[in-house]
Length: 139
Image 1 (tube, one colour):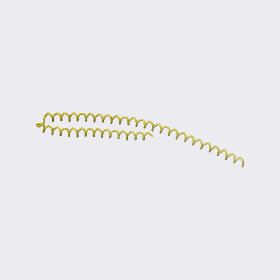
Image 2: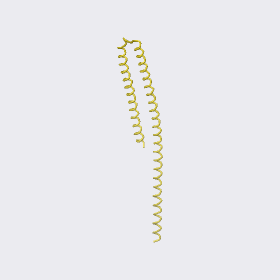
Image 3: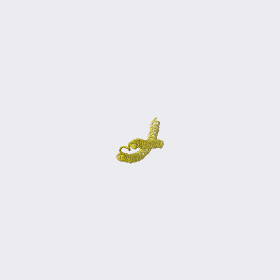
Image 4: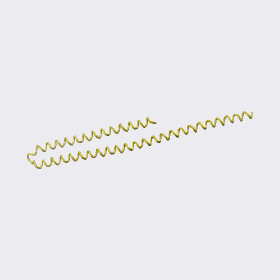
């Protein structure tokens, strides 16, 4: 019964690692993309600063503030996703425990049924031998 549990655990761990990698990669890609776009915007804005420098500087600050907020929000989302994964891990451990308990009960019931079957076979043999002796005695 252990191979099933080990197999389930291995599959769960592989899925967990893959999810963590994908979440990390997606988070990093999103932050890189946002930073690249913001850098392009900031660069473009700086070029046109000669016309409306003070207004543009304010917009640059606002954009950078938005980027920082987005990064903070992405980090918060990542923390929530990690928390959810941890909760799923706990649920999976509970299910593994339940599977082990069911496996143990099934094994115990199987042993009990085998013993009952062996006892019945012995009882039938004994009854058959006794009946055979009774019939033999009558003849």
